[in-house]
Each structure stands twice: as structure tokens, then as C-alpha cells.
Length: 472
Image (tube, rainbow, N blue to C red):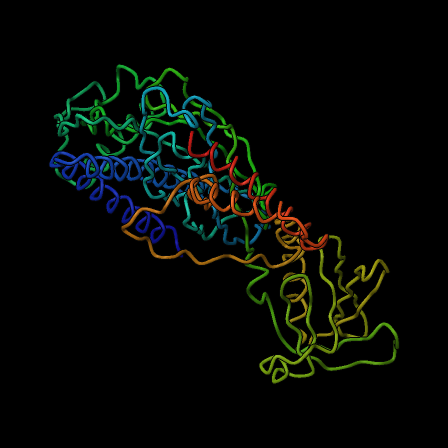
């Protein structure tokens, strides 16, 4: 894709987000229900974040174009491949006081919360969750997949909260005022984008608790009490945090406890972060090769080679690959593998020195076409570089669960405490009393009496636990 096409694509995305921003502002102005205002305000905040990210990307692209025109490279000669990064099973534990959670004392505070996930120009928002002291964890069940991600990615997770009040009043959208940066904004595309940028920048700084400054354009009033979101906490995930299992990460708090939108965060966020580098999921290069086996230096075999993952797979023919037969030879390709060219006999050979099962092994390859030798060498070098940059993500192919379509109904929230199935206390007491009479009957055998006694003690414990739960 050339430079002009890239610029046009980014501009189209910016214009689309500007239209979404305008629609969200109009919807927010017309909202008469609290839930509608909360959703519209969330959409507006998400659009603002996307506009800022796209404008930043456009600025980087144009800077790279200028450096390229003056003969300076803005990046390294070898660029690692991209990949997919997926975040799922997002959990944020809460730490309520005993008097609030167990004894149900104090003022009942309700907040609407959601997460905003940034990775480059890809920004996603989670569903809205209503949180009060009956919840011990804020759970987001969706899977968020970021494509075209580089190994040096930074995935920022932001938690936003809004205090929900009962006496909701419809929001009002104020008029845009002029400032020293510019006067009245017209209806042209360029001026709309500039106005959207200024609005998004100020909205972003206000929601983050920063001062917008006196010289900035005053944004439209996007919300009133009950529908304004504030940044509660955030964290940034990188490639070192990628792990296929469920993992805990530290949260950085962005507000004080005396704010009305405050929630008693435990200080951690739990999620599953996985990555799939492109070099692991797609074949890098394939073609006909002649391979010299290490056991017999005089033994050469024609194979169909496929460079993928951490191996160069050698099949007898392309038909064996299509029929998914086992390869005749697997050459390991890892970050410490050495690839070099051997000149001799007018045939360019490729030497691969790798470690297999903790032992050094070497393999010699000869492409069937002489002009493909350099192509194979460069592909192997690039592949080794990709593996070294993606680190533990290339150890094995991690599984990414495809995101399910969002449902209109809210996901059931709560903790294991509320999912414990307990019997009615009167039923437990009656069964315990009947069993006590059976146990104390004379003439009962030892083995049978022991089983009855164990059951009686278990019922006693169950009765005490049930009483505690019911009295809480």
C-alpha cells in the first residue's frame, strides 16, 4: 500500500469516527433515561479516544514520509512480523469493608463501570456493568482481538466509572465556543476533523483528571451528573505479560477515595493475554529443496520444504503436505539458529546450524533453482529475527477464543458466595433432630452407627453455616 493510499484510509477512518462522535452527541442530548445517557456517554468517550489515536497515527506516518524523502530511514532495515493479541476473561476484584458487604450497612453506592482497551489505533470498549456492594468482582466476559500488532506493543487497559444517581435529569449539550486557536468551525471535512480533535483532546484530559488549559477549545458538555465517566485506574500490558494461563497484573489508581465514583479496588486486574505471531500461523516460504542428512553426508534427498513456526518441515512431496502426512525431516529453527551461505561448485548451498535435543546439528540445503538461494537465506534470517522479537510467544501456538456476539442482556455478576446452594434452616434442623434419635437408639451396630454419627456431625456443621449465612 503506497503512502497516498495509507493517508486516505486513515482519513476515512477519522471521518467515520467524527460522524459517530456527532451522532453520540445528538443522542446524548436527546436522552431521557439514565441508561441511555450512560451508553451514549460511553460511546462518545470511545469515539474521542479513537480520533486521538488515529490522528497520532497519521502524524507518525507523515513524519516517516518526510524522513524518507530526505534520505533518512525512520526504522530498522529488518522489521519483525506482526501478529494477533487477544485479551479475555477480564476480572477486577473489589475489596469492600465487612460492614458494607456482610452487614449491609452504610449508604448504598452504585456505579456504572466499563473498560477501554487501547492498542495502537485499535480501541475497544467493554459492556457496561452496574456495580454495588453485592459484587466482589467486576467481570467482563468478552474476548478482544487486536490484529496487526507488533511485538513491541503496549496494550493499555483503562477502567472508567460513573456514579449512578436516582434523580436523573436529561443532559444538555452546550454550544461550541471560540478560542485563541480558532474561530467558528465550518462544515467542511477538514474543519470538522479539527474541531473533533480539539473536543476529543479536551474530553480526554478532563476524564483523566488533567487541566485542559485556558487556551483550548471548550468542548460540548457531553454529560451531567450521573453520566460523566472518570478514569478510575489503568495498567499497561506488554509482551512480557503474555501467558496462556490466567494471570494477575498490578493496577495504577488514578483518583482518590473521596470521589463519588470511587470503588474499593483491590489493586489488581486478572485476565488472559495471549498472542499469535504471523510467523507461527502462516507459512513463511515453501519450495523444492535438496537436503543433505547429517547421519550420511553422501545421502541427499529431494523434499518439499515449508518454513513455519519453529521448524523447517521437509515433506517427500507437496501431496504429502496437502494430505497432512508426517514430514520426513524436521529442522529446528530458533532464535539461536545460525544460517549462512556456502559457495562452491557453482552451486550456492545453505548451511543451518541448530541445536536439536541439546545436541548440535547441521543441515545443508540446496534450492532447485539457483535464484531462490538468496530468497531462502533472507527468509530464514527474517524468520529467526521474528522469533527472537516475539520471545515466549513463539514457544508454541497459543489458542485464541473467538469473541461471541454481544448480547443485549447483562451478564450475571456476583461471587461464589452468592452461588452456594443452602437448605432452609428449619429443614436442616428437623433432619438433624430425627437423625439424632436414630443414632442414640440402643442395639445399633458399630459400622452402621459410625456412618450415622458422621452424617449427624456433618448436618450439625451445615446447620451452623446456614444460620450464619441467613443471619448475615
